[in-house]
Image 1: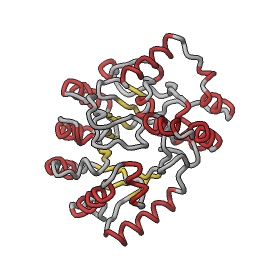
Image 2: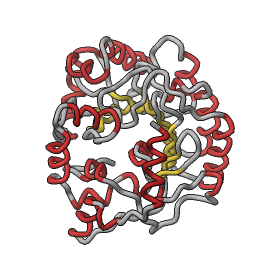
Image 3: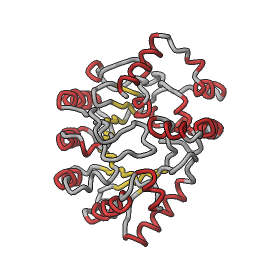
Image 4: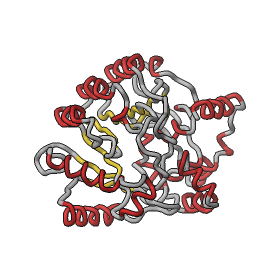
Length: 330
């Protein structure tokens, strides 16, 4: 998979990819828009593709047996980069970041380097009975937990993420609540992320958050701070499913026809830089998934004196329609 991404990126660079043939760039141009960087505030760190699940919607094809994992040498480079760049947010993702062998070191070394630290969790990896020390480390460092919880419907959630995952996730949320996460006046934030379980766009985020809060508290006594409701990105395993089921063309049409020029202002790539497990930089985790390097140039984190410069162009592809459909993806 990594070799394929690299080959695709080398092909684009070697053949001087004409950005005018990028449909997303054409859409931006037709609205008089350009996608360029503002001040980069967030360092997103993908610590590897190892995961205990094979989620249908995964844009990275993460799963069990994956060998891509950030090691200590790359972590040293990431820490040095965070030191010299002074980011406001550090966002740790994967795969399941909990499964990286040095995740405790990653959290401990990065937590002092930004006012806000986030860890993205599928909940089942965090609640597998082997992460007690990690959970208390996250709490001690006020790490925000951003947890995947795609649906309140057991059958839908397990169709996307695997049998038995729903109960494990509910148990994990209840455990986090007992530790103070999601509770008022604790400073321990618990954010849920919901994704549709098919080839359609999500409903209103505000309505979904209200519904999730009512149902989770009524049925299981679970509370949380906020819910983000995102469309699935047509990359990785989700794109493979779209192709296999004959839904790709229809889904891409749905995304592109839902393009909202107002959403461009708030897309995360304008203020975020993503670093892969082996230290290379991307404009976002979705570009990482398809091997499109930051600004179309292969740059290692050790080569960067600081954050990407304001005004730099952002690399795009047809998957970018996901982040600008409807209310957007921030």
